[in-house]
Image (cartoon, rainbow, N blue to C red; front, side, top):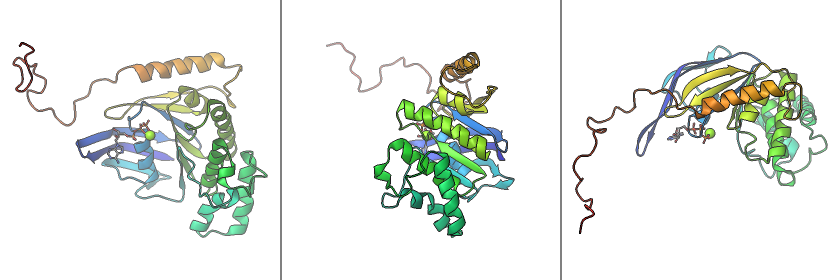
Length: 280
Ligand SMILES: Nc1ncnc2c1ncn2[C@@H]1O[C@H](COP(=O)(O)OP(=O)(O)OP(=O)(O)O)[C@@H](O)[C@H]1O
Ligand SMILES: [Mg+2]
């Protein structure tokens, strides 16, 4: 469903170019749930924005459903860290927003909006305004808003990271159910090893500076998975430990970029001008 081939992305920053991602090759099968994990700044959000068509690649190509991605598309939905709901619109009207933007038929989608809200446990909240909901409920509305466009691919950038630990768990379990029911292809970025193991069919580990694909780990634990006591605690622990090691290990050395100036690494033998010697 998603083919990322030889994708690199460099940003021109004020203090020189930043190589955010280098030569990423990754495919995600239809209906698969891929978790992406990596340290801060290793290019996770950049990768999602490239797949979403919100940002052009510097090299390589991204294809979704066989078509190159060059701009945002209706069959690709994105959920961000903050729910970004329109505060003056009710829950139902927020979910219906894409329907209005794309000028789809209201009546049939309204029914679908109710079904989606029901699926995430928000039946009865359709007429509320966003400020009347908790953060977790707002994020569920954002999830429904993404799902109403029946996306082939849903991209989620740390969607639960602003929530408290218990709400986060609850939403992760619920998202798993949504995924099992709808079989949408999902790429889910997270900092949390626990979340990655709970949600991912596979977990892609990125290493930083520049962002590279370190390893892709398959999570062979039956679903539905949960955080609490269950029959697979051993497998969960083993998988988590492996991810932990991968995240802590320094990435293998690469030729630096940009090329260092000759002499940059030569140790200083003379005191540079302007630095006092320390003697009176
Ligand atoms: N628009 C931009 N202009 C310049 N540099 C950028 C831009 N966007 C991202 N970067 C740089 O690219 C690198 C990767 O950033 P990115 O936001 O993708 O990381 P991340 O893995 O999502 O980090 P976090 O976990 O903190 O969200 C960082 O060094 C960042 O400073
Ligand atoms: Mg990010």
